[in-house]
Image 1 (cartoon, each protein chain N blue to C red):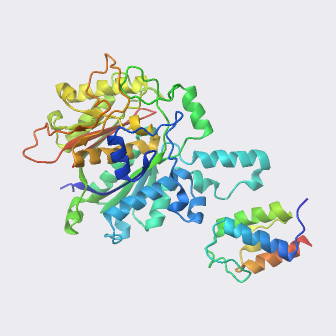
Image 2: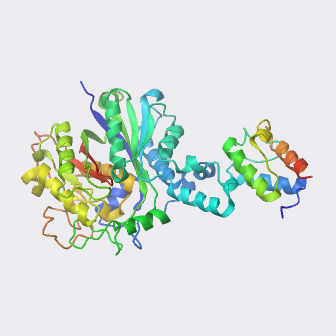
Length: 81
Length: 402
């Protein structure tokens, strides 16, 4: 069973995931992927982590216009409801 | 007139440690890095040199290449690129590519299905990954690509780079080879074909040799147009005098036993360099420690060099670090240049028993001062060649002066 997707749990998984991917600097909801030097390949890996954890499938289309970490967190929480 | 090509930087990651100096110093002392039948870079920790992100987006063979290239470029160009980036190329050979990454992703595909396979899988494993990563890291915008010719790839990459500079396509090329293939399939396959040593020993040219020992690492050189290098008052480490390559067109893995085509590559490289056999002071052999290679290579050296073959010290770097496959030619090119620069022939480590068919001077076990035996015309510089032969019958020979 996928984990319960609360804002806190999604935030934790995404923050940890981004650090695991080698994101540069502090990660917060306000960080932009550009600041973190996270590119499209990293985002696909992040989407894989999210799907493993919460069963929420994100496509490239879903995230291509998202600039901030917080936007991805909100999207995952909304999708999991 | 064809420009001359000089070497202004060298870098190596080998089972003897990080650094071209480390390789030469430890090999000269007669050290051998083989443990349990493998020659791994045990002390190499990629995140000492690369960010976590750089390390996870590249395979181990690319880690080796990036670290060796950092050393080579910091020696050659401590103040940054001296030429237009568009005039600097990057050519790096490999025998197999990112095999560890391929095996890892194959496990994920089998166990967890296609959706779990990393989007990084192809850029990790592709054979050109090292050339791409080094070009990206240093902003080299000239021609860049990988070279695949099994255990001759490192030498072929340097050969391609030489021709690029000679043709005027580039002012400089960062060139070499990288390999990290000590992974399940390759270890099993080399054993299955009887190529690797069942006793786990690398003793090239010894009567008891029974196969090669797998190694890993990288060697990277900075090659420059000699005139451009002189104009910026660079102090070259050595000069490339010649290069040639040939093909056995004989067998998937076995060398042609007479060494005929390997001999032709040596002869053509000497002709390209404008040298006679009497000018050659040192031979860095391919010397894999397989029964077939060491026999046919000895035949080739005698065919190409005639009576001089018996007067020239011949040693094999693989006696100290095993066989670095696609990195071997580049690491051994560096070892050859160091040998000439320091006038010291490192030994064939572990050589004890003469094979009656293998009757050259293999510099057994102890380094020996290298003497100027040639028609040096009063020049203090020494001349040497480095042989590389690959599965598939690929022969590449480089000729250096330092």
